[in-house]
Image (cartoon, rainbow, N blue to C red):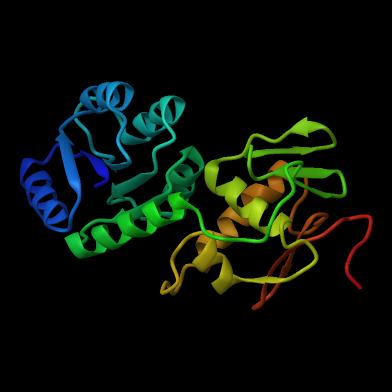
Length: 235
């Protein structure tokens, strides 16, 4: 059974969520502060982390960044912050998913299952060991490495997942629903277009382009996203 590290300082919330997740078949290890969480992650790595941002000893966003420096375990952030700016910062810092408070234990359990399924990987088109090359862009899904013009790209986990998925389907428009299902593992989500738009925007910035001057990433309003070779644009 997967081990879940629950980082939550509210004893009542921690106890209730721990019981619900245990009943759902998970092994839960609750801690109440950032210091304890980082020690556990370094010595007894969990399969997944639920991270509350309102911790007594450190801001949760700083904890997330420190956690990403020592672990690749998926992280679901529990937050009362709802602004686009805050959500972008969380995703860019390495969060795999987030839930906004208040939330039900059933919702959290569903998010956990989706993130864990994503981590197991899903069947896809065969990719040669050398990866995929589109123009001057090179993506190696196995090594989780990407470069452009020979320069390594510094991508977050989700940015790489998005780029890799598009690169393996270069020249084809990938619908938003497909991206939500395959990259975000949210097949039943609605109103999540903002999540895709945010990541496309950040990915474009790192590729050295913009929505007004696209090169590799083309968006088709109301349809989806396509990765193209800028030297061979679609007809």
